[in-house]
Image 1 (cartoon, rainbow, N blue to C red):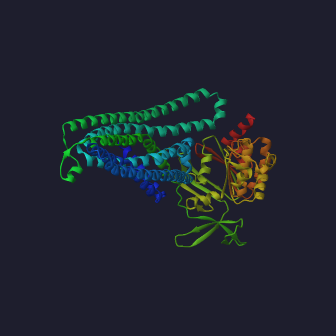
Image 2: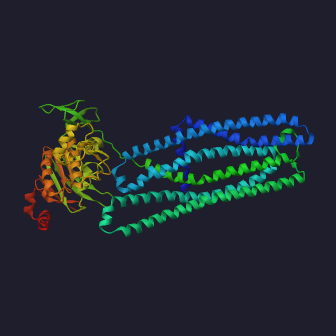
Length: 638
């Protein structure tokens, strides 16, 4: 791991632990107490063993078995009580950790999803959807292992190591120094191997996200892949991405898996070394330096009742060091998952500095506006001013763009000096080649993106002053690519207006020309739609999108190739309903099929982000310019 990544990883873990304590301020301390009880009771057998060996040694010299049993039986009984306490503490800990782990992951997913709802459209345009999904699956799952197992194990091992080390120092400093030599070697190797493992686990999580993004993209485009016989190329592309994932995955686990055997063998070697050195010290009757000897006021020779328990303590000590090393795998994956999760959570949300809101209003015959709580079917912009006054502007759908410039990527302009106006009830059409900037204009009206220069005014109010939610609720949007959600047909229509009645939804479907095919579905309006409505044709899905926009009854409609997936016969039926839908509304139409825009009040021809022609259909035909070429060319092709 690079030096720059170390502080970042540490901060991610620190932040995660802070969130964990904040989510469970009571349960976490209880778990901590249970872990401490378990760790302390696990270290006590060494003390009891030393005392039992000492008593047995005295009994063998004196032959007083009755006296020895009076000491040993209480020791064994006390040790059994400690084990029962440890069992209870371990059970409580495991149950609480199940609650904490799953509950915390649930809270994390909720926080991530809530944050995702506040991200700008640009985020989803620039990130693969499969990679975003990977945050909710793979990245979250890495936290499960760490929270449920690694953190409790680390805490338990740290407490146990501290306890055992104090006990070892209490009985023999010389033997403890031998253990420290082995532990130093373990820690050195763990640091070296662990750093390499962490680096590759971080790369693995990123590669997993890339792989899922590719798979999701290929699944969405499966028909295109088969039509163009692109299967072999897709396999080759996937093989490369998958091989990259295999490579980093292999290296990550190679580092992690080699650590355990190395630590185990160092522990076994240390066990033999302690036995040999202990034997040498016993044979030479070397004075035993220990905390106990210092407290008792004199040094005594090292005895067998210290060496034998010391072997078990050393095994226990190195075993816990090995357990810590074994957690490198899950901790490294969790670090990588944390960083990716926090990248999503820390994404800059969609900014909204608007303060003009849309309110229900009552407008009298003289044009006076009064705000009301009840739904009147009339709306007004509530505009607070700096001097504390309020003004109400009736919602009419008057949109003006003046000298607007915009670019998705800085330095690569998409729109140049766009100026237009759309009066209430007017139908404005945009035509031009693909990439000319037609859809971009509608994205700016919705404020999916903000302009770089110029102004857009809505009912004579700068749209930057209007709250985005209120702005968008006043607009109806029908896209070329229809998105239907899992639910009934009725629920999908009601998506345009959540408090719409069944009757309003049915009327909207009739207006859009969708009622005919809906009533012929197996369950009519209660037919379930799944997988983006794959059981419907593209044209039927688009009719539902039109019905969804119609039920909202907005003053401004934006139709981006709204009838592109509808056959000519159905288009004529839908066009009648759309004409009714567009009555009295400001309508922006984007169309390649020029027959759908002939009745527009004004047609604007775009080329490379500029409006090069504008006028009615007859005016533009008379000019014999770009529109004339598009129109006549279209009919020549027919």
